[in-house]
Length: 503
Image (cartoon, rainbow, N blue to C red):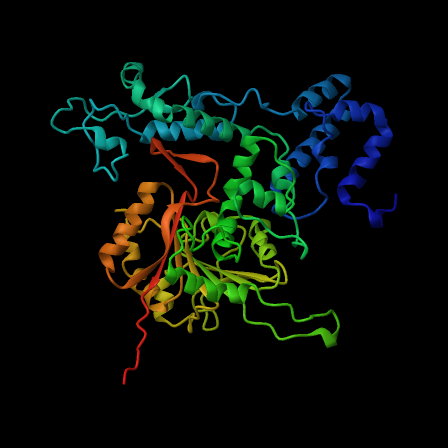
């Protein structure tokens, strides 16, 4: 076996296989589900984004090496430790008794901050929506002071009430979210189960010109994009939690978008005008490009997609964002993440550069992701950069804005968008927003109507996002608050005043 044609992981395993025997090592290292260890089964790519496979492989190597030095007893113990921590039929555990220290720590945080939703308690804050648990509490009729949620429901395993009596008394109301909370519980334990995640291991590459992407729903999209078959609903929920961000953008901008102007398509006439301009750039005609100098052709500038208020989406694995370029194979895309939290939890990965005259806003550029994708991140507010003319000029053929769960109308974040919204409307380019729930989407739209009535046109009527995340999430500060990533979507644009000449 020549070392020049073999990956380093396989070379490290070869001496151990020769010393212990292939059959003995194969039987000792075989996993409970019948697969070979992650070292052999995963892709040998050294991409740093595939952390799940690397963690499994690293732990398997260390345990195998230590066991081979300590005899048969240690080998038996090592075999047990290399098996999965949790299996598919053993994923439900109360949060406070979870095998995962991270989930137990999360349960402690919830018990210290979440409040009991029983209406006998006095409200501790002003409710933010009719679905808020605090909205059920009457300050005049309630007699008990606010109490922390320390009792875990035996059906969902989430701390939701202060005591068993209140849980039993309010059980009918809790049944509305109990099944969803149990599903969240099992999905959280699945992530820490120690299993190999084939749905995260590899993503398909560029799309063949002979195949057409079908964006009717998640199933047709994953099938026509030739994703590995996902036959488990839980795995489907896990993979859509990441893919919902790039696919939501693609589903709106693509020429085969499920949002159209026909009945039920939710696209307005003004939306058709704006999206037609963007689609003209994203789907250029073939010009006979080639690999030699005679095949060089002029190309249009990249399409700039501004993601404002970026948080979790800015730290997604870059393989996930590359799916956006595979859907538009003949266009160049420049993703621009802007927001004060756009580099949260990424300081060790990309330390913030100093602000210099050549880089006044401390932007971080990733331009080696592929021939068609570039990502730039700014830890700054958009209205500050807009006033400095950092992105001028804006062009409806090349620019659009995407706001993932912006919280435009939320009382805690509305003041941060008050200065940004007028600048967004000045650009006259499409703006698309998503929301966690139907109420969240309606609240954002009502806030925009209240602040800029008559100054914008609706491009996409509000409604459920076809490519929303199939996985549900809960709010640690209020376990009764169950949301979904990118549940709904709508779009608007600053109104264009076109002058008409009359004789």
